[in-house]
Length: 280
Image 1 (cartoon, rainbow, N blue to C red):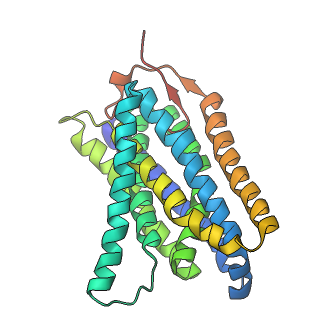
Image 2 (cartoon, rainbow, N blue to C red):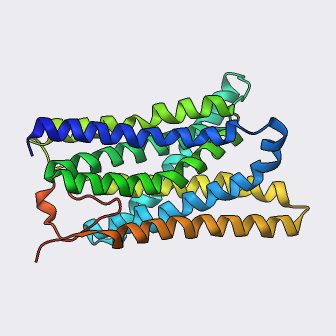
């Protein structure tokens, strides 16, 4: 496939993936009172999606790429610490400038983490279309599958942080366009350096873990601390979200396997839904 045609296909595919942000319009259809009642359940969904993506998607793919668990986990820990410092910096900035915290820091963390995640998706899409249109299409379909629960969780997190539902969809879409930047980087740098997003995967996983455990879970426990029965049901929703991400990711891996040498892909490998194994 010619590079120019591959670039067009990759950009179109990345743009389609960014359109998944509009699933957040489901929240806009609800009244403010209904949304307030639903919010704790949305938090449970978001926690499950974040943890599922981190432990069943990002970390395993990073380990599969470098075959070094210790090295990957260092970057996961770095991601946790980076997002913790980023959150505290937002809080300190608001305190130092006496600004009213209209938006909770978790909202900014979510946008940063999702932006990195979408950027990596764009890199993956670009690398797969460089090999061929069939692999590019299969990769795009796999990414769309795991983006559905991700966008539902992201929208819920941003609403919880203080963004109005209507604005959340627009912001999520703009952040989703970072996948186009990922495509551009891979094509621009293809002759200069082999780009491997493996450590970005681990860094993003650390961010997702911090957001889930450090922010959203305490908020969920606070919401349900006087209603143990409700908290149990919310935990089941969380578990269901984790299982959903695991099922989509596992199903994507078994849907189509491509045994391709890692060296054949400019960015290292395609990780989203396709098992790309090193040549023997």
